[in-house]
Length: 433
Image (cartoon, rainbow, N blue to C red):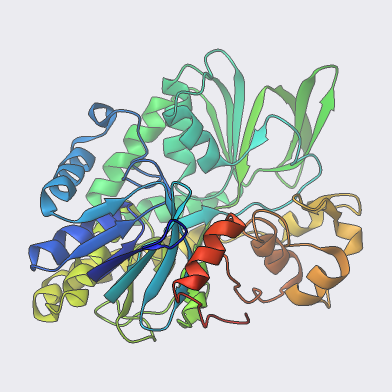
């Protein structure tokens, strides 16, 4: 094969994503005797939830699954971004600057979720970052000791992130949950059905005991003055400002469905639609974990097991995991209901508020009647390096616009890599080329 040609790899089961769902799928598919290839953009397996510098820093369950992956025989390609996909389950990817093509009999999509950022004045200032982003940086060694930090947003993720920041030495000032007290307390009361999750929630809250945890509270704006940030909060009755060095603010998670949509998989209510064995609407393509809208590491492990076994032709064995999967889906539905976004979050946005931060597009440049395509044509919103991963969900929330079609490449990719993939016959027939 020539210097410029893409390396070709054959697999019975290809798995995109090496978080808990992808790991479980790989372990079970390999255990069924299949040739398994795992592709992930991160430098180490584990996904966001098990992001680590050293394996010893992880909880026992994470180390156990990573050890099982090591022993499984699955071939893992880390620092590898899947940028194209086509008929016959051909995946085009960039592996450390070089193109590779994977030909698979079955595919498991375990691409996780991404943070949902809803714009407000000042959200692009240095020192304002996502809740999950802060969690990732702390795990990677970011120094927060003594820094004044506030966490604001919605959903169960606020608790472990606040706990991690406090353990890392941050001067945690406030945790603001936008959901009402009635919804949060009702959700907490329902945790008796899942005792392990209840114990986790209690432990996380204990880790930042003494810190204000306010329900029905959200950020209105952030201003930079005299070398420091001032975050303005409201509970709908009163408004106040407090100085912070770091504000961690996001509005939950949205499933990462770009690869699934490129392949033509049906998406319902923001998540990839799957059947009882995690099969999507496309033959031989399965999805597991956050892309399906089913949240949490426990759900991801169970769905990954089902998808891995089904993709390996062991659907009868996969059936044993279905009752547990259904219990996790019930938890996800309760989570979505309890932490649904309040209408007031739309009203924070002013004419000058940046909506698309890659292309510096303000709210005043957009029109509620536009779809994603028209917004791109008129303003370049969604055409930056994030490819609408940030502003896309924001515009959907602000204007009710549908998600735009997916195009190749799925990730920023050197032209030489794309040319080599094209020469290798991996010219995807994905949506709206």
